Amino acid sequence: MDTVTAWRDYELEAAGLTGMSLGKVEAAGPPSEAAARLWRSGARRVRLTGTTDLRPAANSDAADAARTVRRLCLVRELTAHAVYVEWELRLASGPDVWRPLNHLQPPLVLSGPPDPEQTLRTWREEHYLCKCLWRQGPGFVQIRDRRWGELHRFTVDEPDYQEAIALLADGAPAAAVPAAILEDFRSERLVGDVGEMVWWLPYRVRRWIQEAMAI
Image (cartoon, rainbow, N blue to C red):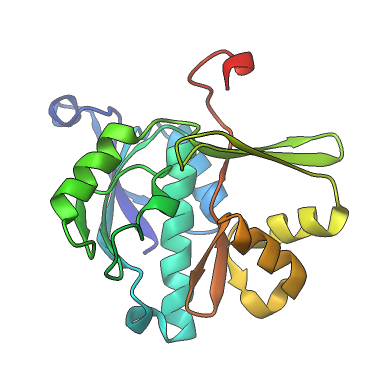
């Protein structure tokens, strides 16, 4: 997936007006750079092709897992820019498998949970920008996570942990991350596993929805 369809407006009706379509736009390279290029080009609504499939059977191959992680990272980065993302998501069966992802723009179509339509309604109703983010300070990284309904805040000042976050930002093989650090991230549900790949779930804050003191 190196191209997406993009429009200059968030609203579907406005996106259909003359001059609003950007057509097919390249989204190659690191997801953070691709999302930034799309934003600078004027994209405010983006459609991804195909279905993002997180079932283990769909990601047993290393190349498939890497493609899935790249797609998830692109959705994360577009969400951070407040771009409306049209995407489809297929999860493994389970009632709460979607919750670690509920800071991302809700998909248009969801399958996997026992009641996917109700799950998707809940996701849409509870979604807001800055739900799970990180910011870079002088010598530390701070993570603010409200995916579970209350604020969980973490401050990371250890250099090796910050290096791991940088490595995981675009996804990396689990074997490339020190086991103890990866276990700490997994225990706080800050990373997602896709086959042999692991990716960083929080997005870097790009756009505040309230005054900074209220976040």
